[in-house]
Length: 142
Image 1: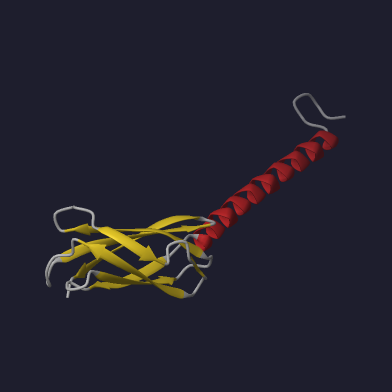
Image 2: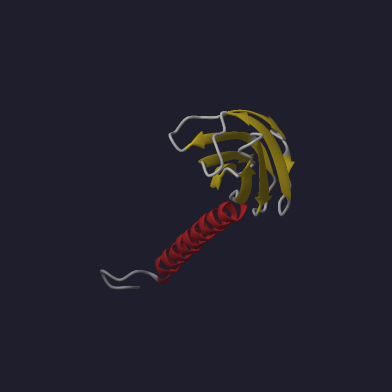
């Protein structure tokens, strides 16, 4: 029989088992948390855009490349002049789904385009299952 202040072997085994279970549970929580964060990073929307504006016709072409792992929908386009004004445009291609690794071109007709050499900022909004993305590019009218 243990002397006063000592634990019996059964109590020591129970304490060791509880500590092991708690340790394994903590490891699993950290593992699943890290796995979830890395999965969100892998599925984060990612895109690249390029475009041009014709000073004489007001025609805007934008090519969108989906560099992410999930499909994206083109949900909107806004064009801002150098003074911050928003151009009035009608678009062909809004709502189109761009597959992962794919690209798609949209065309717009805008009024209020100035002369050649004027600079514009185009903001393309894309929506995916794992979030939204606004891709911005600066173009010069030619």
